[in-house]
Structure formats: structure tokens, C-alpha cells
Image (tube, rainbow, N blue to C red; front, side, top):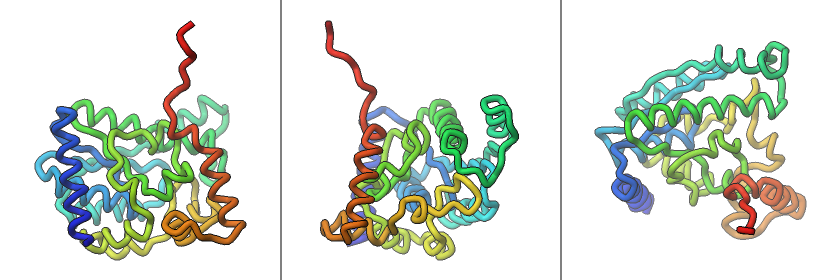
Length: 242
């Protein structure tokens, strides 16, 4: 069943390339499980022209190490683009202050994924390739992404999969155990923990999305996140023709 799912997604990726006249795929390698699964699907779908980009930006060094580990395990060509300096310069330019690695100001830390999006599209344009996003169903449902950052992509191949399904697919695709078992983190600040920021666990999200069942408090948090972040899934509003 898992093998069949992987093959269907890989076939879908190939068809998307044909439909859009693309020569290849470009995917960001964060060192996490979602990007690992996405990258493995991409290299299987397009073994001759898939590029992985490792883009540390004041990041935990282990993330880049895990990204390299994954790329070498699945035979994925990759480039590393260090964004520390340009990010720091932008923070000073915009705020007048030096970057504090512990700060949680979203207006500042969301610059990181937006710089990564710019980097991905630079390479995709040069290679006539599609940018492949890594969001799963839990994230797309509650809008857990940065608008025009990691939310900016041409394809979202695992956006119909809850976290448990992503883990199952990761094991099937040979993703290293260190990546499968590491705590989920968007890495926007030092010590960033996805589940703490969301206020719910991925297991709770999975259960609610698959069965509709959850404690009332969990339901309330998930539903509120989904409503508040709905704008991330919508196209820019256009007035009627007057």
C-alpha cells in the first residue's frame, strides 16, 4: 500500500512536469522529515534533473548535517547556499538592530523562509524546473507556513498526507532514522518546536483530520488556526469590474 502510494505520487510529479513543460524539479532540504520524503519522491520521479538546496539561515548545524545525510543516502545532487549574512543585513536594514537568534518576532524570522523561496525560484528559473514544496496535510489545514515563504511552491506532493502517513512513507523510502525521529521544527528561532508553537501535537492533528475526533480544547485550537490562516491558501483579492 505504501509502495503504491509512493509510485502514484511519483507518477503525478512526472505528469506535472510534462503538463507544465518543465525539465526538472527543485526542492529545499531542511533536514526534516517532510522535506526528506518530498526529496526522495522527487529523485525517484526525476532522477536525472532534481536539485536539492540546503539553505541554512542562522540554523541549527544539525539540520544541514541531516540534509546532507539524506541527499547522499538517496543519491540526490545538492547545493548549499548560506543565507546568514544576507538575512542579518536585512534585519539591520529593516529594524535598525542586530539579529537576536532567540527572538520570536514573526515579522523578522519569517524573512528566513522568504529568502529560501527566492533562492529556490532563482535555481528553478535557471534550470526550467518546478519548485516542489514540502507541506503536509496538517500544515496546510491549519496554515502552518510562511506566506510567500515555504508556502510558495509550484507543487505540494505530500499535502494530502497526515504526519503519520509521512512517517510511514519515510520508512519505506529509506529516510535515515535520525531524520524520522527528530522533533519537528520549522527552525525559525533557536529551540523552535512546532508542536509548542501550534499548541497541539501532530498526533492530535492527525486524529482530528482522519476521524474528526479530538478533545474540545484541541478542536478549538485547530479550528481557530484554520480560520485565522485561511488567507494563506487564497489568491489575492480582486475587486469586481466596475
